[in-house]
Amino acid sequence: MKPLKRLLPSIQQGWVRHLTLFSLAFSLGWSLNATAQVKDDLELVKRIREKILATAQVDTEEAMADYENKIPDSGVPYQMVAIKGGEFLMGSPPDEPGRNPDEGPQRKVSVKPFWMGKYEVTWDQFEPFMITDFSRNPDGSLKQMSPDYPLHYAVSMPTTPYMDMSFGMGRWDHPAICMTQHAASKYCEWLSAQTGHYYRLPTEAEWEYACRAGTTTAYSFGNDLSKLGEYAVYDPDLVRTEYAKVGTKKPNPWGLYDMHGNVMEWCLDQYFVDAYRGKRKTVPATTLYPRVARGGSWYDTAELLRSAARTRSTLDWKMQDPQLPKSIWYHTDASWLGFRIVRPLENPSAEEMDRLWNSAAGLTDPRP
Image (cartoon, rainbow, N blue to C red):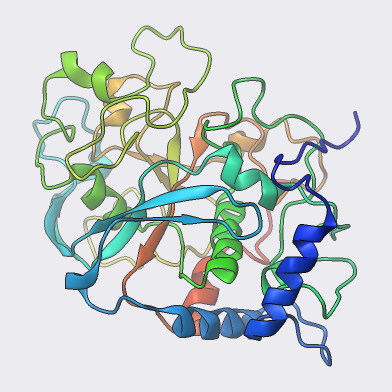
């Protein structure tokens, strides 16, 4: 089978648009250095951070507001919801139906202000990152660099898949799926390099805080399971065969859609069954497996959609991956796995950005 070559219609307008982007990049000083071969490393992150700091317009929680932006390279829009900082009780009480031991003991957690994607990242947004016309090395770096390229071209991107990664379930306005946590994090870096906003995956605490939206019940709408279908795409009868377009169900109290169900969502954290019992450092993750995903999916029953429910990544998520060694970009068996982005109000150091965008870089799959 030949590599998938489908691109967004907005990208298929030819090189005129690309030349315009190059000119804009040069005028702003965000092109690649003509005297140095720019690699996807800390030096690149430092340059992205310079752009982020120069672009920053909001520096107080009071000034935060919801917004819509467009990805410069594709023109595809995305929406972000402003979330005030605060404290919440993370985890579930012992008597919550469907509870697992790794959800406790409950603990009080403080969360700083951030924006979160209103919807899960869609194929419209993800595919221009996933599929390009540039020849790339197995690690996603460009085989040939040019000083004319905009800054985000230096970010490692996936090698082109040899199949339709949506598996025929739907593309435009549907959630992107089957990516590794590394691929999701590199998308965040790619988007940050274009927009001048710092995006990353949510921490597990940020995710649960946003999912609960001020509630303490099993779900963000309460405990009444008869209402779950109003808010979530899931599989109560174990017969569902596909995901749905994002935003087809009701949002949670903070205006976030599909926090329960549709696709499970990556978090930054290393998974530990006893993470809530001590002071384990879970961010950044230090091994490829297991890592945390949240929210449940179209493939799951109700208990995995609870606000406190946790899922660990496993090697089985890429069992059918035909590549040897296994791909660093795709979980071919996880057709129910996606992600959404966050943008913290505070911009960390370049070193911290690098650690979070590249927490899987250089790690090897433990399976032969």
